[in-house]
Length: 463
Ligand SMILES: *[C@@H]1O[C@H](CO)[C@@H](O)[C@H](O)[C@H]1NC(C)=O
Image (tube, rainbow, N blue to C red; front, side, top):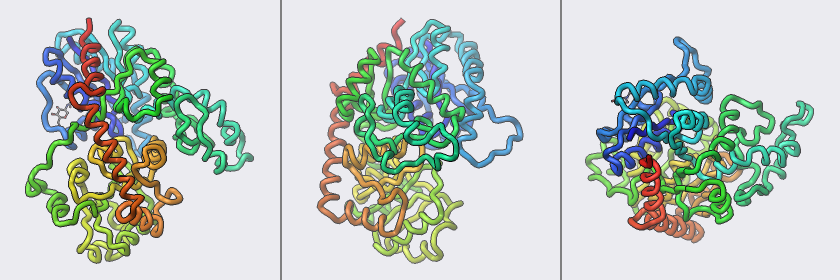
C-alpha cells in the first residue's frame, strides 16, 4: 500500500493535513505514505510543531511556481496564485518521484479538497480519491452552492454591474440570513469574496474555489476536520445526501484530550511561568496568527484599552510590528501584561489563568479555543474568518464579536469586561466548556469521531 497525500501549502492547511497523516501512519503501519508539499510550507510545519515523523511517512517537494528572482508585491494571495498556476504539473512530477523512490505504485490519493484537480489524477490512476476539508463544513457548503448563492444575491448586491452601482455594499441586505440548504444560520455578510465577489474581480484563487464545489461531489468519501455533534441538523442532512461516507474525524490538528502541560520551567518563551503568576481565568490571550496584519490605528485602540482597563494580557506579536504600539506602552504595562514574539498557543490556551482568547477566528484557532474551553473575542479579517466568527458569537454563543467589526478602545474594553467580569460571560464560558465535553466524548473510544477515523483507515487501505 502506498498512499499519496497532496497538501495545500497555505494557512494552517498543511499542518492540519500532516497531523492527520501522522495519525493514519500510526494506525496503518504497513502502509507507506508520501506527503507532497512545497519546500517553504514543509519547512514551516516542521519548525512549528512537528519534530519527527513516523518511518512510514516520507516528504516530497512540490514546485511552488515562484519564478526565480521574483519580486513580491506584498499581497499574501500572490503566492497562492503563483502556486495554483503551477498545478497540477508540479504534483504529477512529485508523484512520479515518490513512485520511483519507493518502487511502489500509488494505491490511494488523499488530498486537501482545495486541490480539486486531485480528483482527476486519482481517476486517471484508477485509485480511490479521499479529499479532506480543513475549514468548517459550512464553508464547504458555500462552495457547493456558489452558483445558487450568486444567482440569489449577486445582482441585488450590485456585483456584476458597472461602477455606477456604487461600491456594491448594501449594509441591510448583507445582514440577511442565507436561504441556502443547511446555511440558514449564516448571513450574506459572512460570505468571503471568493464565494460572492461583490465588486471584486474573479481571481485564479476564486476560480479554484469555484471548481471545488463541483469536483468534490464526485468523491464518495469526504473527510472533515469537524465533529458531527457541532453541525446544525439541516447542514448534516444535506452533506450526508451528497457523500456516502461523510467522515467527521474531529479536530485533526489537535490531540484530544489535550496533553497535560509541561513544567513551566521548560517553556523557554516564559509564557507559562508568567501565566502561573496570574489569577485563574483572568488573562486575555491575544494572537491573530501569522498572516494577518492589524491596521496601526486598531493596534493603538486595542493597546489603549488593555492599558486603561488594566486587564492582564499575553500578546503574541511579531517584533517587526511592535513599533505600531503607542509610545511607552510596553514599559507602562509590565505590571499586568506580557508581549512575546511567539507563544506556545495550545499550552497557553490550556493554562488555567487564560480567561479569553482574542482571535481573528481562523478555524484552527477557534478549534484550539474550543478544545480548551476558552471563550473568544472575535476580530475577523479575511477568508473564512467572518463565517467562523458568526458560529462562535451567534450560533454556538461561545464568544463575542468586536463591536462594529474593528477594534475601538470602548469596544475592546466592553468585550473584555463582559467576558471576564459579567454573568453573561459566565454563561458563555459554561457553553464553551459544554462543547469541549462534547468533542472530548466524540474523540474517546467508541465516540463518533473515533469511529469515523476507523472507517477512514478502512477506506484508505481497501484494494
Ligand atoms: C521537510 O522538512 C524537514 C525538516 O526541515 C526535512 O527534514 C525534510 O527533508 C523536508 N522535506 C523535504 C522534501 O524537503
